Length: 471
Image 1 (cartoon, helix red, strand yellow):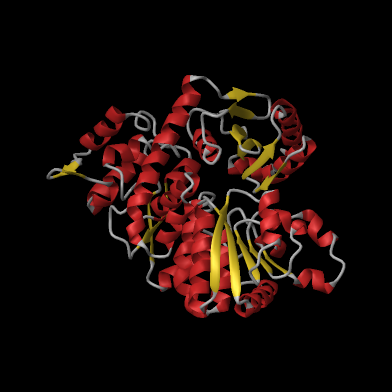
Image 2: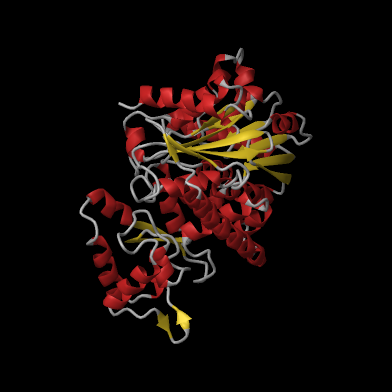
C-alpha cells in the first residue's frame, strides 16, 4: 500500500459494521495479548469503551487455548472484542457478537466452513491479511484496534500514539528503519494530534534512558566492532570525540548530546560500516512521545514498548494497561518489571553462551532453554541472539522452553530470508500440527506449542519445510 493512500473501501465498510456491533453492545469482554502490541490494543479498546459509557472487563491471554475459547464462547457479555489475538482460531468461536482486531495469519478453515450470511455476520474479523495488507510490517494488532476505535468515534484519533507504540513493539519499523503502510498513516495522525515527533537519529535502544557508555555497549543491531559489548571500547569512543559522559554529577544520555556532539558521534558510528544495509539499520526514524518527560522511560516509543513488554512478560499486564490509560502512578511497578526484564534477558543470553546451547543444523539453528528461561521471553532472547554476533543471520533461529501446556517454540528470521520465500508462520503451523501441537504468527516471527518429547521430530519437519521454501 502507498503510504499516503486512503484506507481501502472494503476495510472501511467492515470497520463500520464492527463499529455498529460495539456501539449496540451493553457490555463487552476485551480479550487481548500480553505483549506491547496487545497491551496497547487493550488500552485503545478500554478507553474507547469508557468514552462510550459501556460496561466492560479486560482479560489478558498469552495465547488462545481451549480454556480461553471456552471462556469466550461462554462469556455473559453482549460482545467480545479480541485484540492482537484470535484470527488463527476463528472457526472455534461459536457465539455471536465477536469482534476480532488482529494482524496474525488467519484461520484458513474459517471461511471454507461458513454456510450462510449469518455465519459471516456473527463475527467481525478485521485483519490486514484479508485486505491484501501485510500484518508483519504495515499494521499491527494495536493499529487494527485503533482503526475500529476511530471508526466508532473520530474523536479517538488521540489514541493513535498507542497504535504506534504497538507497531514499534512488534518491530514493524525494523524492515525499513521506519514505519510504512497503514502504520505510516496512523503515525501521521499521532503527529497531527501533537502526541508524536519524528526525526532521523541513531536507532539504538535507550537513547533517552541509558547512560552514554551503556547506550553503545549494549546495542547490537547492528553491532559496532570493538564497541558493542565492550565498556572500555564505548568509553574510548566518546573520549576520542571529546564528549563528556557526565554533566556535573549526572550521567548523560544520547538525548543529552548537543547537536554538534550528536553529529560527530553519528558520523563516527557510520564510518564503522561499509555496507549500506547496516548503515540503514543504524540510522533511521525514531519516534518521541512529546507529552512524557525525559528519563521516565516513556518518552521514546521503543522504551515505552519495552515497559509494556516487561509488564506483560512478567505476569503484570494490568500495570502496562494502566500506563497506556494515562495512570503514571503505575510507573513504579513498571520499573520493577523492567528491571526484572533486563536482568532476565541478560542472564538468559549469558546462560545460552556459557553453556553453548546454540546448535546448528543445515537449514536452521536452535537452542533449548528448558526451564531456565521464561517461555514468555524466549522469543525476545532468540531475536536478540539472531541480531548479535552469537548466531548466524543467514539461518532462522528456533528457541524451545518449557511451558505449562507443553513446549513453547519461538522462531525468528531476518527479512532477507522472508524475501527469499521463508514463511515462519506457515512452517510453525504445519510442523506443530504434524506432532500434535499448534502454532502460527508472522513470516518473520512465529511460534508454536508442541507436546513434550517431540522436539527432535519437530526440528526435522521444520528443517524440511525451510529447505523447501527458501529460493
